Amino acid sequence: MAGPSLEQWISDRGLQQVNDPDVDKPVYRLPPPDGRITLSAALEERISASIREARERRNLSRSKLAPLLGITEAVYARYEASVSRLTVSRLIHLCDVLGASPEDLLAPAAPHLWGENQSKVDLLLACINKLRAFDEETLQDVFSLLNRLGKTGTSGHGGGGAASVAPLLVRAAEL
Image (cartoon, rainbow, N blue to C red; front, side, top):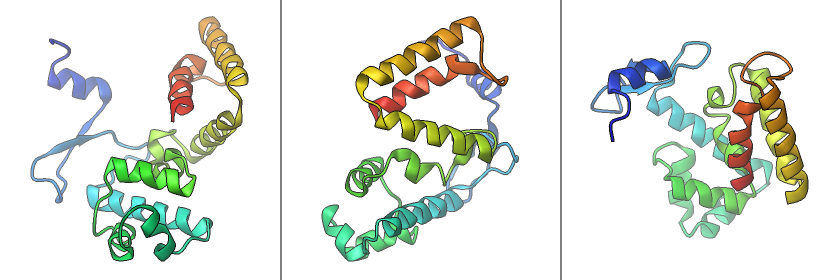
């Protein structure tokens, strides 16, 4: 599989080399709009805070949540204290048990993945939440509308328009 060279991929994606003290080798990250790249430890702290806040919003104690995940309260507490790192499968399990979306738990930790400013992040997350409530037929209608908007080049307010949102909508519907 040929594909682009590593250097071309880095350039095309706008990745920046980061020397993260928690990682033995240099890593590459996409800088957020404010230019401040979050290192691994800070990202883990943000994820920990996000899962703690999601648990607290649901009025669940650690002692009630941990058994639902098949772990002890002490093990779960290490996730919230960012002592232990969550695996993706554990994060999915948390979404199941808390009735949370992946966006609920991850967007607060890495908002730049959802938009270049907080206003856009909030709007996109609100749209995703609305889409989740639609039945399949309505969701298909919305998707068709967005496809038509993307083909005509009508995006509303500059930027990528509906064509760039459509894959996200498909992914959001699958989650």
